[in-house]
Length: 254
Length: 259
Image (cartoon, rainbow over all chains, first blue to last red; front, top):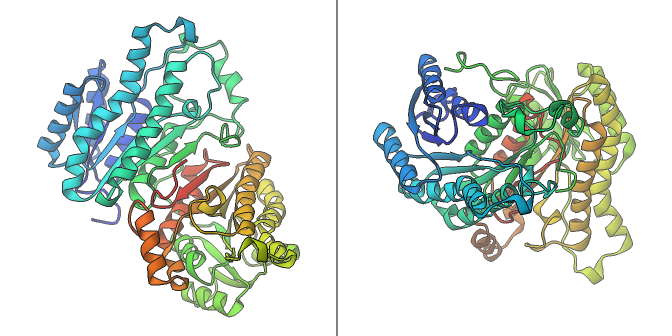
């Protein structure tokens, strides 16, 4: 392993990496020498663009279109990673859908859909990837959660809050069960990040209003979350933990 | 590859040009932190109540003394932090990073803790954090940039391992002070975070083989942590890249406790 390529020889799958936080994490891992699976569900052009971006910079990446809520598709994605790069060493379950609905507006279908994409998906990934990690005695599992999962502050997203809390519970279970196999599992809880998003479902002046709620006075950058992911990959004594990267927004209470 | 993909906050975790104070840096975790920050380019004030020990570590970092300064610092004294800041300002023009690592564990049965011992443990482990933050926070705020990291303990969050009443209370207080100063300084460019280590290998010298085996069986990863693993976490939190993390406690404990 060279000094500037500490992840050389490692293969990573980052779900939802066509844009935003997932893309930033994939780029960070590639920068450190990992081969990366770029995953998307509907926007193949975005996935291709990230793959090209990494390849143009001298890195290794493939694109795999897969619905992370479909266990067969996740299994196939893990297989593709092993075929292409020889292993799966790092997985980042990043995909999340959020619907703005009060409890009584949430249909059973809505509930199942959010839990499936945000929580079940992380289980589908772990159960397929962990055997590959066990074989090498080394693995890193990262779940992207959010303030929501630790602070039930919103009344319009019960499914999202529950899924995010569940994701962290899964982190802890995996940590305990596989700690002695050299596998760590951790959660990152980003606060407000300046991602591309559908502003039509958000209140007017969202950014201005919500910036006021962030103690450091700004939204975070996707690269700041990628830095946390990279830090967790490099530290073998941190497992079962949640790293809050939220500009102080909920750390005073959690 | 590194040059081709730009990263906000610069590439790598270089601390070139930064000035750091590490307390309790003559031995163990503090020594590892001093080495890590210095290796990343920071000038380091190596402080300890054991001045000879601080001199040895500072000499190992930089025998010329240009980038490593030994300081005698008793963290129970408010004026010691004022003096440290003055010394750092004289040597390097100020301070950017403060790592409050000095601490003292003492195992005493509850009924045997005297008022003097209680005050002493609280002074070393908690009051030290308050006065350090009090002294350095305004300096860092005025520079619009800074990083404070307080080394606490998993004992300040959980009663999972053997620790005494004064120690757990003091460490819990240090974690709360971290959040307090994070809030006071938020928006100024200064972040304040804590790291809560689990069992670290430096503690083995004080333990019986049976006690060591018991700890290893309790920690999910099956071993004590290394001082370098705490130092790496400090290096991350003081980097430019961690500017959106403040008020947090990063638990580096091999999975011993999970919040």
